[in-house]
Each structure stands twice: as C-alpha cells, then as structure tokens.
Image (cartoon, rainbow, N blue to C red):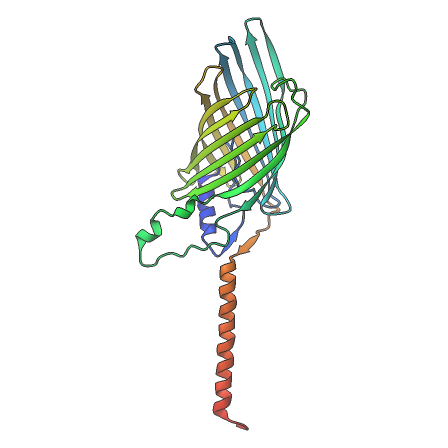
Length: 323
C-alpha cells in the first residue's frame, strides 16, 4: 500500500496554495492489498508491482483440496494527463488439484486485464487550509471534510486464454468496471473503497467490494487490513487480508501479507511477499495553482496599481503646472 512517508507528503502538498496533483516523492503502490488507489502514479511515471503467493484451499463438501503458487504482476503507466493511468495486470497460477477421483496439475494465466483509471474529483484540489495562529486545539481537532473522498473510475477488459480456473463459457473478452474512493484521515490513516462490476456481459457476472484501511507507522513502515467480497453464481467469498510494507528506497517497496476466509466451501489460506519499483526520471512536476489565490493575487495587483496611480496624481498636483 501507499508508504507512510507518501501520506505525509500528500497531506502537506494538499495544504499549500500550489500543489502537485498526483505525484509523490516516494513510491505510491497498490500492494500488498488488492484494492486500487484513486490517485495515479503521475504523468510519464512507470511503475511495476509484483509478488509471489503460496495458497491452500480445502472444500469439505466436495472433498477436494488445492495447493499451489501464483505470481502476479501489475504494470502502471501515467500518460497524457496527471490524473490518467493505464494498467496491465497478469496473474499466473500453478497448482495441484486433488479430488476423490484423482489428481491433476494445472498451470495457466488465471487473470489478464488491461484497463485505465482516471481521477475526476479531488476534494483537496484548489483548497487551502488556513491555520489558526491563536489555537493549537483548533488546528488539531477532527475535520469533517476528511469524509469527502477523492473519486476515480476504472474501465478495462479481461482476456481469456483457455483458462482452466474460470467457467467453461467464459468468453475471450469481457468488461471490468470500477468506482474507487479514497479518504485521507488525520494520523496517517488512508481508507480506500473499490466497487467492482466484473464480466457483466457473461453468463456469470461478478460484483465485488474491497475495503482497505492503511496506517503509516513510521517513515519506513506501514500496515493494512482489508476485506474483499465478491459474489456471483459461479463463486462467492469474503476474504480478510492483512500485512505490512517497508520502504527500502524512495522508489522501491517490499511487502508481505496473509489472507484467509471464514467458510469451508472452500476454506482459503495464503501468504506472500512482493516488491514495487518506480521509474520516474522523465517526470516533470505539474503544478496546480489555487483559483482562490489567483483571484486574490489579481485583486492585490490591481490595488497596488491603483495606489501607485493615486500617489503619482498627488505628486503632480502638489508640484503644479510647470514645476
């Protein structure tokens, strides 16, 4: 997830009159959770996020069990606009599937998704918070406007390459849509919500909800808890996930997580590690100046011009003609 230092930079940036729209000085990763943040990586910034995960699933009613590994890779690229990001997500799985009638080894691309995300509302854009010079309590009290989230939308499509991990009638291409919200609360907390409609044109559309709460602990460490729910006629589940991330360098993050559910049809347990890396050498800061301040600056310039003109007229009047 987003590193704690990134949270502090974002909050400090949003509080100023001139701010950077998306980019932060340290890496902003979606890992190790499964939710997407509302903010992009920044225009011309390229980011890779990958991980290795081991899992065990047991289905009591069907008397089956599955154990294996999956590897996932997410490529993120900010293009054209500061708010726009393109995504390419891959997940490869290898497992041993055991039933009362026999066993088989399976391997394939479990997920291949291409899409784009756009931030269309940021509550802190063009907002300037003025500190109270006379009250420490007023500056540190809870702010209700923190409940106003940043909002982004995601649109993409899934590619199916003869996938044994999905239903038989799954088409070669199917859509995936998402609404993303993100709140940044005092104390280094970030709350992200993903509302998902996946494969809506297929025989088994899936609808999901992911809730992720992240807390910055130190400048290097952050931790998160997450609840992932998805429902369809093909498969439904509720997963609980937790973990931590460590900032190795400003552009490199290491993470680890555990995932489990609360049912036995099937029961799920998995654990994994991951790494996120960012390339931002081509990034050029995009500055957005507050509209309120622009108006104040224009009024201030006009007043200064009027004062100068007034002083000039007064001097000429005191001199009189020909003096």
